Length: 277
Image (cartoon, one colour):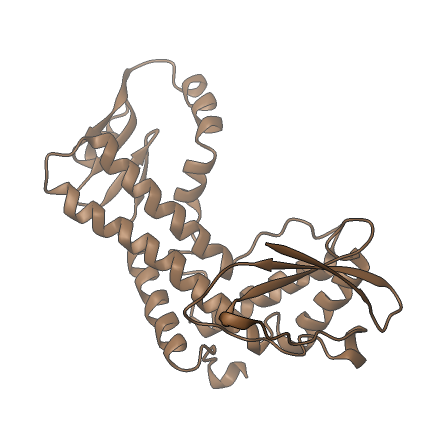
């Protein structure tokens, strides 16, 4: 059920408010005075509803857009410059999002462990690994966000950059982390493009179009062209002849999850190293 409200803010611009009812929640984080009036132009109030119903307020201007891009850019610059890209009271949302992606990734790896000792088809095992890699890619973007939109929205791009840097410090990550290496992720995301060029570059030899379970050493044969191969023992996936060892991804994700759970248990706040404060 949605309810429509009309509000004239301190900026003398009219906004429509839509209350989106989302039902009961077990744990509720209440945000009050989200943006101080003297800094960002208008107040957010706290509304108490019966039966502990939780709702989200969405501000829409008359043009139908979420918020004027100039206002978004102004707020983004404020967050980036004064809060390092992550305002303290929203840290809980990033922590919980990180826990979700990391947990789903490790759940996929656990299913892989349980399945590889059974009579499971090679395609199914590769599918589980692909699922794990997908979740690790989503996790990676919190720490190394996309650089798209730098020209059109420079302040939002700066916000993403600062947010990523702050999270990397809190989770003790650098470019040596397996989460930074995007080779396997890109191999999946651009698989169709690589498939196009693979057969143009390789026009002679033995081709194996199916998925194979075996040693990754098979991919070293210069006359053999392997479509997909999974080495269960070495935890290596071969895609179009290129080897990807995925065990380091699991280790990095587990380390991130441990830090995220510790942060959640300590007030859902990021624990930054002293030299980063």
